[in-house]
Length: 283
Image (cartoon, rainbow, N blue to C red; front, side, top):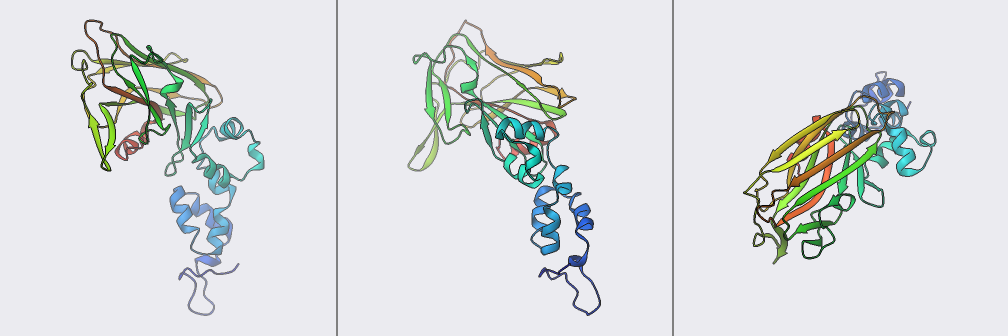
């Protein structure tokens, strides 16, 4: 097997370098690394590049439900694609359900994440222009947000049925108090219409078809920036079985009106990477 130009080849006749290892051995080494590490080592020489194409390497990096995802999202037979190609394509993101949902695989961990646009939810009086504005926004992965002008009774809810990979997931509502815009090239947030959120907390709920149920509540009052509010967690034990998830946000105290809230999406991601995604503002 040829030796690449990595600088790790032998400089003395008769000696071998990493480039002389069998690809099967290199594949075993790469299989223990993260996807970004595999891609970096693939640039070392021809032997590492060849090993990095192995299905053996990439199958362990794919989410457990990758065959389901390929059929649902790409309408293709997963047996006709290499595992490396499947991983690359799933890193997407990929839209489905008329563009109201989006799936992507986290490149570092191989974990599956999902976002659901406000357009895929049931929202109190969402089509009443006296209550809501629908605004184009570069700050949303769906390029549009819903801005609440004023209501007495607010409920936001949604549901989905999906074959999630086994694991425990966190569900977040991505909200912002105040309406952001650009002025002279700088981001500003208008708080003029903000009112009513300091009176009562917002109640979040998540339930799953296997009987799991989580409830949380908090005051939604941090202004000027997008915040991912944790609604609850749920656990999936078998990716072959579809699970139905219901989620909601509610502030139904009719003693006062509330307004000035931006609603973007709901994000579902594995618990073990939720903190990292929040720190990177990826949610």
